[in-house]
Amino acid sequence: MLIDVITLFPAVFEGPLTESMIKRARARKIVTIKIHNLRDYAEGKHQITDDRPFGGGPGMLMKPEPLFRAVEAIADKSSRVILLSPKGRKLTQKKLVQLSKQKHLVFVTGHYEGVDARVEEHLIDEEISIGDYVLTNGALPAMVVIDGVVRLLPGALGHEESASRESFSHGELEYPQYTRPAEFRGMKVPEILLSGHHAEIEKWRKEQGKLKTKKARPDLT
Image 1 (cartoon, one colour):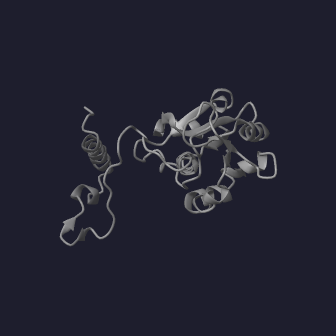
Image 2: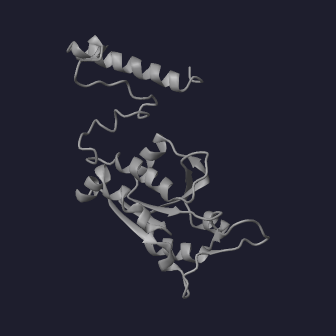
Image 3: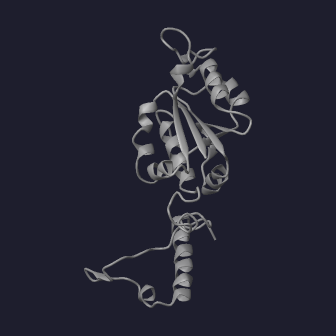
């Protein structure tokens, strides 16, 4: 998979995208991630990327020209162009699975009061929000989506079952897990997990996952 990110703050991505699972996935050529500075596509001495909104109002808007130049230089007909925006559809595991099947993702990270509406209407394929709250810009949301997508790519986690067994993969939270010691400060690991009966263990795990989901989401039946 190829992932391109268009941002005003490329340095923000250096840490999260060069560590842990994503670092290994990049090293194995499972994913290629490129970060593009939007100012490189702006004109003039000061490389201005924002301006005041027509009709007045607080804050500044991202100008359409640099964004159009950037996306048109990076994307093609097979690309999926995504704007990280609080107005977008809320991110779910189902959406991450859909995105993981794409060959090329282009993330546009907003800033200021948002982007010129012509960008949303004519340049973007979809808008995604990671939650009902406000952040300084779209850099952190882009990293969240990238992390969620990359871990679903074959080979990224090193074990084929890892992603399929994770929370939300089947609409439920993950069951409780334990490791050594079997008893710690009087707290014991459930006997079923020490029994060696794999069918019964799997049954217990499914039941525990359902209970955990109901507790976290009491509205579910």
